[in-house]
Length: 315
Image (tube, rainbow, N blue to C red; front, side):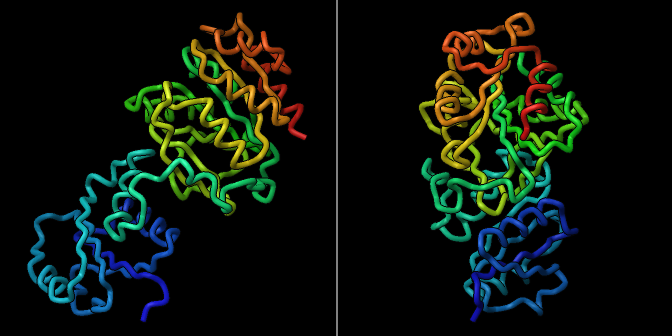
């Protein structure tokens, strides 16, 4: 009798990079994983009731394997490794959720909004992971250029975690990650389920998912508010992170929208610092201007000055 649910993973062809990601995520979700190659059919554990066939070489004959699994009444899940190897960010997260749902329908295919309100994800203390402060970076039109200048001012060893919420469409997500990573100081990574948060890192929030930081310092994703007007939504991320971490700070960059004003208000009223990019250094300063008019901005300056302010106030 297996202590934990066991999933068999059979590699059809060479072991692929996406398979290792899948194995790590299965273990994080409480499953044991037993791996086999197509040459190890005789060694397959007949007690395993779910098998994932990770297909990379479609020319191999699977008849004997399928017959064996069918005789054992096993649930067979086919995965095209050529496709999953290319997935990134929110697409990879969704692929993972679909796989988990096929293993057991009790695994939500779309996490509920309340997923971020569990005991494991509320009031998480990131100081145990070397992170002294968290800054949400909200931006819209003109944001990428400003964010790149801002991130370039850091050394990369500061005890700060950045969460980037940049308005964009889904087709630009990968491009945005690569563009912001050109700062060469702060590692910019698109949020991915199971990834560990680190000081000196910037997490790029996906378009179609919100993020959660669990007490073990690893990221999870949850479904977004379906009524949001912007993708991703700055206000929603602020609310989620305040529930998740109790206290966060916010830097507002160039942008023309109302999204971010309620989020900044929530951050300010919960004791966080709010700073803004100056009008003369913005492409459009509508969001920052509204926050300044509400007397919530504790510092106003260009991206370089904003970075210097944060470095001077890390403690």
